[in-house]
Image (cartoon, rainbow, N blue to C red):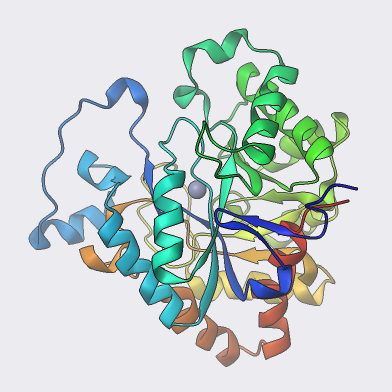
Length: 342
Ligand SMILES: [Zn+2]
């Protein structure tokens, strides 16, 4: 039995799952969403008068697409902590500029637990050498970040993912997912998957997970809000055993720039969650805001990481969810998923 079994591995070291408090299962404190081959694109400073347009088309200004300011991150995390937040999972992985040393400083400064992810994002962010690596080599790289740490920092990952898939899935992305499943089996860490933008995306990902011998109940399907649009397909996905992560709370625009979809608003997300609970799948639900751009930070007029706690939870209560149901999705489910398996 591994020493980590039953424990959660934060960037400051192992903690008991009961210490996590309310968990945002999918955020980014430091990230760069600009694809590596476009990194020299110059953006414009974000001005108050541009915010309305930026909220509709948030990919229009490269300046919006990266978070690298530690002082702002500390300020935003203080707001999360003051609102009653306990833990953030930072799912920034290789290719989108993880910064584990800054995560350590933010966690020390604010008292918020931070769990760091490990793995590789979508194909356009892969290092060029990755196409030559085997799935076993990819698994080894992830395992090293969990057991020894990122580079020579000694700071360790506590989750695998978000593993990035496109639609259709690129063969190198499928190879990364297979390597990630091997790392899941060998480490006891849970696996988090960013599926391609298609209703078929999450099902194809779960097909690969099961073919590779992965553990569905320790697998998180991210971004349900922009991928599945009816209760039947959500229930069908829940029946594969994986967790369903509604992680785009606060993102309510009808003008989603990445796909021609009708993004649900928060009330609709809550309705889906309630119906999934009624269908017996409450223990598979996770929630978050997936903040990865400046315009979602309070510093830039956005809702900030405290929004789920200060606005969404009251709406959940108003719409009939009980405190124990809210604790299940915000505390118990993430605690169970983050604790390493034996
Ligand atoms: Zn994300």
